[in-house]
Length: 175
Image 1 (cartoon, rainbow, N blue to C red):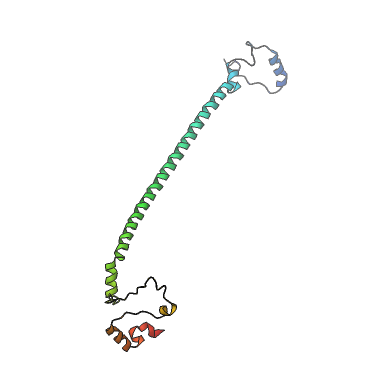
Image 2 (image 1 turned 180 degrees about the vertical axis):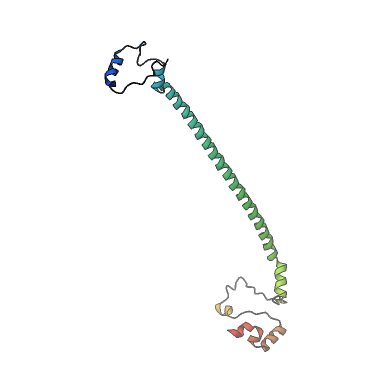
């Protein structure tokens, strides 16, 4: 019933073992052939070559994907910068137009005349003198340039002559 399940005796096993080996088994063992030998052999060279080619294609595909993502990112970044620059240009043009309007308003002759007459008490001259040089006379000499030519109404000239210089302009008395 339990054939072959008996335990071997460890005492004297060295003697019995060689005897068992010498006996012939009912079947014959052939080393190096068969399906089991091919499975233990490992991966074939053709499989490794095919696997390497497939991995090269996968690496190229992944690299192309990364390049595409990088180019898309760079394009989006440039588009955003362009939009910001366009907004800056529009803002600068609006500011330029505002400044041109303000310049034209501030430099208008009617505004300047109003400020001069109201704030500083200036008036337009009532009379003016002009000097004409004849063609033959030549340039004036240095002595005539030293004497200033003044045109003042007689009433103003007499009023100014009666007042001291510091009464006319208070800044003159400070110096």
